[in-house]
Figure (tube, rainbow, N blue to C red):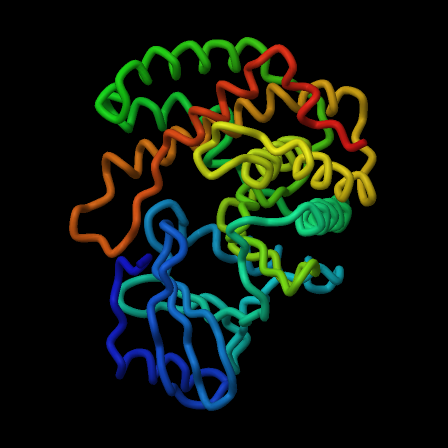
Length: 320
């Protein structure tokens, strides 16, 4: 369960009293996620998400996220707004943490998406990118290409996570540093659009959630992250061609990638795989033993990385 910080009931009641959302009926920890403490908050006015910000989310970044979600909501994208209290304040404090009460969206996150659901997710990602093309907000990518060496160093001995991993990571970092593209179309991206961050009812996307890695980067890199998250088996050993084509087909309905972007996708996907391999390895080593959180095995992203390094990797991004 992703709960690092617990909330005193009296403090919660005082927080909710600042809003026009009724009074507290229940507040239960949510299992998903590893970055923040999340609760399903039920009041006499409805359901909401209470999030307390931990670890990698800086309190100074929260106004950016509030503005970003407001922009996407205004643009018609299915995202959860951060609710403001009677004084217009969205970012609060409780239990010594910055916190927000967030709109609850219907739908479920998927474990085994179908081709139709992958296509819908690709289209939703493309529509979000279109909405962000003219967005003036910006944020440095704290998990971007320039940060990966630092994450690797902060993890410690990667061979303790998996024998031989240190050499693989060192070689991949050198390759990506030498070949990382420049000049591709860029704006704010989601940067973490895994199936558990997309809510669906049937084949319809009802919510894109968890924007706390959103930052300025290549839009094609965002697509590469989503490809790695949606098109592979759980252990990362195989890429489902039908799912991959569906995802790319949905995205292409909204965004026509340039030739340079299409050519860069295999390399960007290698970077995406390395990014999640490194952060999962870091969490595997450094998550406190008493934290109520399930650590994620980094090995499936090593498998993805190796697949994207193959000579035929470009074929994984066909939309036909």
